[in-house]
Image 1 (tube, one colour):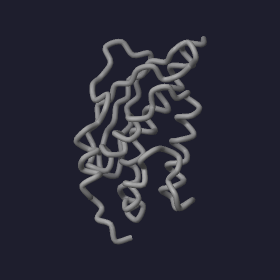
Image 2: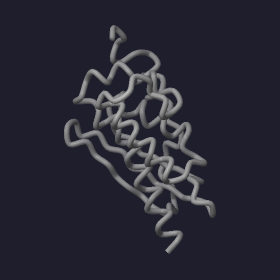
Image 3: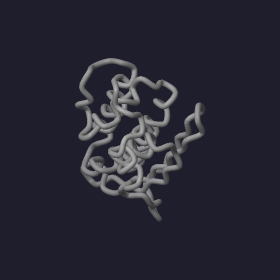
Image 4: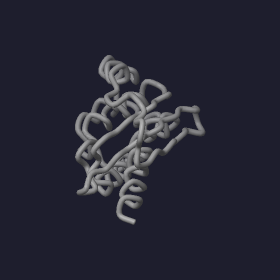
Length: 145
């Protein structure tokens, strides 16, 4: 790929993360950190009576790729079930590992495609998806127990 790693689309996403504030009363919170680069994402979530993500709050301290990925995740996460979020997390990890050519698991992810060639960036790219999927699963478990 000849596309630059930090292109204007990635930088635009990194600068405009939706739900970029912590929730005051979340049903679950999860912090994920990349041991490679120190990037960190905290996800606060609330689920509704149908176990769908109803509210999301993020604190993102990551490189531009991690921020861009969290921005894409947050743009489309509301209304998804914990299972759908887990599938997206797993498909992202598989795609970054070279499985599949088209990132059709989540809208807009083709903009991150140049980063597939940089494995040291993959952990940061996965953080937002990992934190939200785990927090949603915990919130559903708590709500249903």
